[in-house]
Length: 586
Image 1 (cartoon, rainbow, N blue to C red):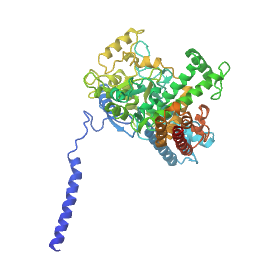
Image 2 (cartoon, helix red, strand yellow; image 1 turned 90 degrees about the horizontal axis):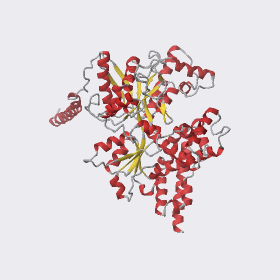
Image 3 (cartoon, rainbow, N blue to C red; image 1 turned 30 degrees about the vertical axis):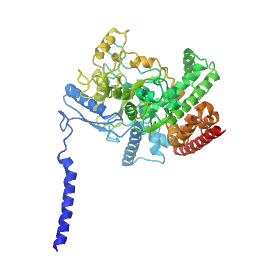
Image 4 (cartoon, helix red, strand yellow; image 1 turned 45 degrees about the horizontal axis):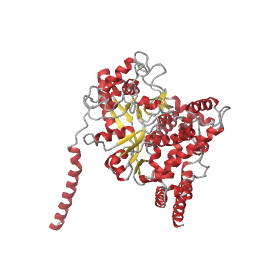
């Protein structure tokens, strides 16, 4: 071999060797994640969760310490951070379907056509063979038969946990009457965790809310002044102001179940405004809704004693709420996948305001505070948001059910609840990070009717990051001040997510272009024709109405009607822009 060839081979070898060293360096100097006292053979829990990393870390450390003290061994948690609740639900569904199908194949059991969807359907199928599949899937809770090898589903909204229960993915952690002492009531029998409040469901036999959340508006006072807006937004309708064009931070509701709930709250608040403006009192609304619930008539059919006009007012508010969401989408600077991004961008001035979950804004306000001056303001609109829960559920076929139940017990106990809002380093508080969440236990909030509960709340208040005794923060006061009528909007939760995507995101370029034209040519008041075109709703597969929303979601293929909707909205927005330009030319 000549010298030139040898030299070339040596050069190639040197390049390959250097590459190997570069690739290996991170592994050679990698530090293993500290596991404290945990050692091989100690319990491991597998938990799927949309919670952010700091929450996962604090609860892993807190539970491991608690379990070591109570049961003599620490616990390591294998977190499955797949994404938001939408991604988690898709993953769970796919894994359960595959595992259950494999089980039936192993056992030589029939698997007729349609079994995959029938097994995890929310409703029992009518076909007898598929009904057998549906029932059989829900009978077993043995990881040796089928399991997705994950123990717990921790976090996300009650909608997703309720859906998971209806699909058979989760099971009750305890038999009726077997919930550990001190969880549902204290030693004196005072309720510590209501089934719900303000119309929201906080727990069921299958899921238990671990923490509470509200929804509202975050804003940057400095950016507002630059836009000529003197008053911070305090109502959802404030976000439809044309001065917010291109200045709002909002989140994709198909990626975040929590933010999807915020959009539902916007529409619900418009329903309430509509019925109140029509002259119905709060007592009448409550009486009508109780009568409707008791009658169990087809959706939209009013029982004797409930005027049809009342239902018409609900429907008018529902449509008004959808159009409000549409204009908020027209003002959007972006639709992000991560709900925490909005508060960050608003605090830095990259957006003037946005729709936010309460704790994201509280944390961001804290970390960006300069002296006593806050760069971020947050408000829950008065009468504009319920207080909902983020539950925890035990998955069917959990590999480690006993330790899973202990984790649920810890999360719901006073020890676990302190982690949500205690300041770091305080007795029983988080080790490193303030989580700034609202605990669910009643004894963290004022309760003058029960002196011992009040005393415990005042003791907690010495260490909490937020003033939980303040009516503006007190979750029980806020929940009791909001009367959530599930019938108005809850059955349309999934429908809203798809509609908002088609209406505001997939046709977003055309929407913003039309809205810009309307603003530039005198605003909504000067452009009634353009506004009518902008606010048109599709009529395929059915006209979008309060009555049809549930049918569309349950009876028609999502991909088909989404395609129809996007085409419809894009054409409508182009016509609206043309009408606005034509109006200006006249």
